[in-house]
Length: 92
Ligand SMILES: [Zn+2]
Image (cartoon, rainbow, N blue to C red; front, side):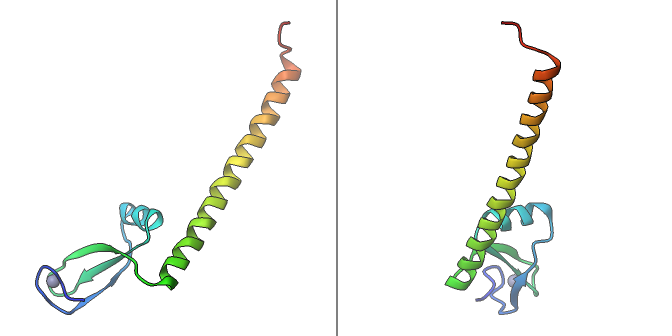
């Protein structure tokens, strides 16, 4: 592809550097491009099943990690509530 700003063909894939870019890359199936001639930089939706497959896998992994974290928090809450229930009996 050519740079939309200066029509240069020196457009390359770019890493997600800032936190905002990393969040975008995590949340959306996009890839970043950068023009070496004029500094133009933007993200575009990924194309191709390999990229989409990698995105789906990363999303599943991310959802699993969030689910595990929530399960741990819920487990801790249950334990804390059980301890409180023993220490402070509810009035009937
Ligand atoms: Zn350019």
